[in-house]
Image (cartoon, rainbow, N blue to C red; front, top):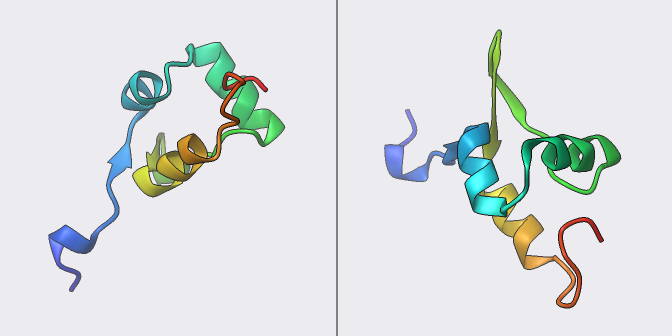
Length: 69
């Protein structure tokens, strides 16, 4: 069994919006276009984003452009 400290942290949409500074329509538009990581299913009606994928997205944003670039 995995140690709880080694499990990836999963963020729900409310937390992703706060993390990214995006609005919800912009978030889903970027997911659809492949410019933002897609969520993973965690249940029949639930999705979440692995925190490490969000950190990678943020680290690779162009320095002079916003998230829609």
